[in-house]
Length: 254
Image 1 (cartoon, rainbow, N blue to C red):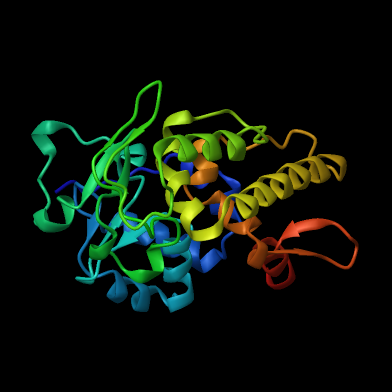
Image 2 (cartoon, rainbow, N blue to C red):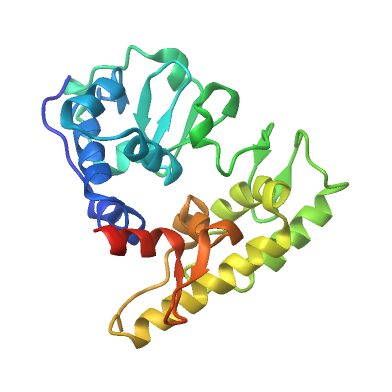
């Protein structure tokens, strides 16, 4: 197993990452350093205790989808192959084949095939299990389990309606994969409200000194960025500036 690890600014220089507490970010670094060559960490709780991080820090990494925690106690760094490239002659396959079999890799990022194998804290936007999924120019969803949509056309129309307000760089593949289970969990109207809030937040920040603040890529937004803008996580502070609840808490205690 390699003894050197790398970190990609595409991951650790994002608002999603930097908005976390210092201890949560430190925990992420330590988990990365001790992961095997496929990104799996055998004893994440031991590492958490060793550096003095809290359970909330670990839960934050799951909620923001920087790690995937399995029911077996093992976790994996979700963007492992975005951060690291290991040459074949130095690569040692993971011992945790069962957990690896529950994942698919998409552009260097692990996605969960079956949410029943992962810790409840991670299941924030994957409550509905998707069966066989094929994504092309026209989305084709097959065997969508436990979903209230009567037909594929309704899903497609709702995805289009949710996405049309998003002002960042578009990612149809990510949206087509992520939005259907979110529609089941939160409803179309709440997802639309979230996008409207995010758009207003970016524009408001640009007016208060962050002129170069860019909209997140749509893939990043649906991979966890949307959470801060849901009804339960979004508030208006005393100065009437619309902000995610998480950001206000970080600035008050940071």
